[in-house]
Length: 588
Image 1 (cartoon, rainbow, N blue to C red):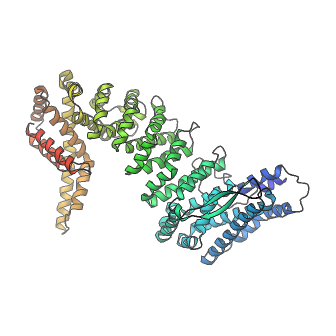
Image 2 (tube, one colour):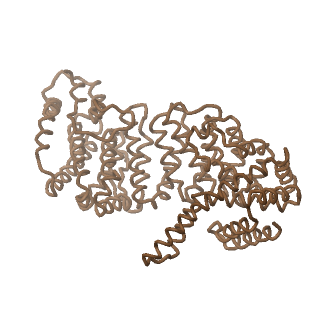
Image 3 (spheres, rainbow, N blue to C red):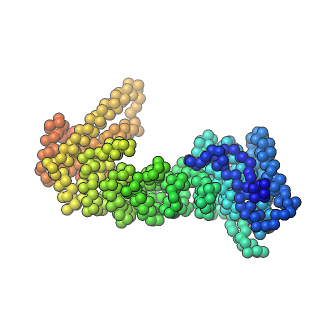
């Protein structure tokens, strides 16, 4: 066995979280610091094994015995304190020798191996979240964050692995108090290594500096570390994956940190990584997932993505699926994540303009025509891009690019391929009806005339389909109403109070049962009946009478819709929209 093999050897430290697709047998990282130290030794004379090198080789050969001894020791508060203090000493010793002998790796390599070993041993703390407060009280969290900028990337990766296990969401929920302490510490003060030029040599050295002004910059440190990792190396690719896992864990435990995380360089890094021209892998999938999480219910991150030209990045990545289906289930999941991210972004008005300028409408329209897997999600994106007053420009452009020729065939019949893909009829019909309702709400002049003419084609077949859907969803809502009334009756019998919270919950259940789609259908009926085309109004009333329907029912549904309308931002908009709907009902 030569020196290189010995330095690459590491004892088994137990199972760690694996990425999807990793093998269980021998995928644990075993090289660690030895990988980098071997590079230093290979270029040097190795004939005399009696000095520092001999001690290192003996230490490596004894590691298995040491690990066996440690496994027998009980883990309690005292042993954890001892472990943390040992870590601090080894970290300081390694730092000291690196500064003192920057151009002589043999002088500090043993301390690097010792440091790596104690980091591996600290994984046991992740099994006892109620002791996390010791990591904070003894400043171990700050020291670990400082090592993220260690010159040896293997040390930084070892720290990332440890932090990933410490912040595992299942572990955090085992002890809420311990979790709060750890996350607070990670967010409150970041410690980093500042590179300084050594006065006695030209090489870069490190000095550990605590800076209070870096408050809340833990994600910035993680991003800086990811930027220097080479994902062509498996160990470093694993390091990137585990870094993303840390961010996901923290975001799930404390959703409010998403805005700060995005502003600390994470959003920029994610967009850069997603558009990188490298083969699809688990890290790209994870990046798409983190991006979708950052954009959920957060206008600040949506605005930041728009300013970073993120809309164009998303459209470029999704354009691949215009004529080709995803090759694997994982790639399909990534595609859905990117579509979800795009839908979130379009809830911000400024991003709708960027979507329009980036020819997003044309891309979504092509996806609808190509009939690939992306068609369902493209429909959802169009719905988000055209809804409300802010969607007016997109509605007009959609008509100009002949989008009506694409959307009305989907209105007339739910494609079988969508059903096979797992998309429910209700979801498909909801998006299609919402798009048509948005067009009726926003279109003016010539474009509106073109839309209304579609309803008169082929003896008003689209009006017939509209009424067919109306009675379908009316029946579904009436059944839901009966169930809810029965539940209310039982609650009153038991003496329970029906407060506003319960009423809101019942209303949401009715919406989910089909009330929202029914409201859209009734809105379309009222709009076309007020279009001035008598043929459309007569056909609507004729079918209502034939099927035993009632104008009063339609009016009741629309009044309920008007009462609950609003974008949550402007009372003025809500009042004007309610008045407009009530005026339409007067002439229905």
